[in-house]
Length: 346
Image 1 (cartoon, rainbow, N blue to C red):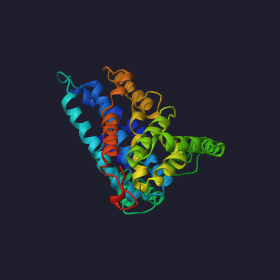
Image 2 (cartoon, rainbow, N blue to C red):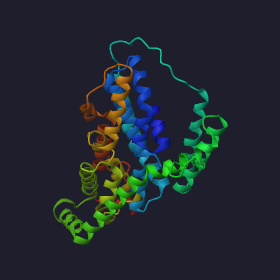
Image 3 (tube, rainbow, N blue to C red):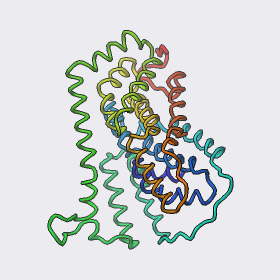
Image 4 (spheres, rainbow, N blue to C red):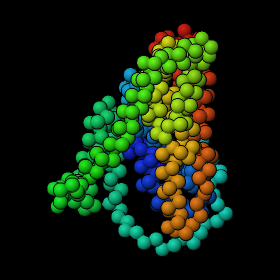
């Protein structure tokens, strides 16, 4: 649950794993949790936030490529994500206990209760986005709020946010570091868009669509299952899930969904949920690799066992979300069309 909340407020599964694993994994182990299920609980919570958060890159890309508003996407996706999360929680409750709690070591940390005030910034970001404010505007509010709280509570100094460095070429503070940290992902996204455009211009995407229309898809139900399948396949070889959405969203998912009158939010939800399933069980994906790196490091620091990397294959949230998604596509639950429901030929 802590991982879910953190990921929901930050919109990053990778950041959630980096920030929470060093604390939650050793604490949970010494409290008596099963190591494998404990690690998966952190990963599952991170996946939930990446799937639902209004400031997650996957949510932004899915909404943008389908022409949907952030507000309607998050609200209509909530039943899907939360249903999967509840089922995953039940799995953790049943299988999450170890035989007994271990002796708790003397963990020397400088804990400050005032740090909980930083959660206000997360509430500001999510609340602003859900009120319909632009995502960039919401993020600015959250960053300003976090900076003010951190300075007032004495956790950072104003010069750490931005200040003239002592020597030329050194970092000017958190603002510059934040910009530099996303240069790589931005370039990667641009390259994916370039590859997508080349494939569109070559006619590959059109051929895939034509083949699907002639041989695979003739009903709304089949269209939704096709969207889920093609998105999952696109997410397997690519190490980040947002670029996978950029690859199939504009060229396959949107025209396929529009042909069967699926609403923009529904198309976005099918695509976003699909890239949050298999993506979080395969070890070459950045979120899983980062999660395990933090997990292994925390285990070494406290001389406790770490589960194998293959443990990610059993990620409960990934499998429950896939089950919920397939159930929704097959039965029509949570489906919304741009035409009266009477014409739904599923």
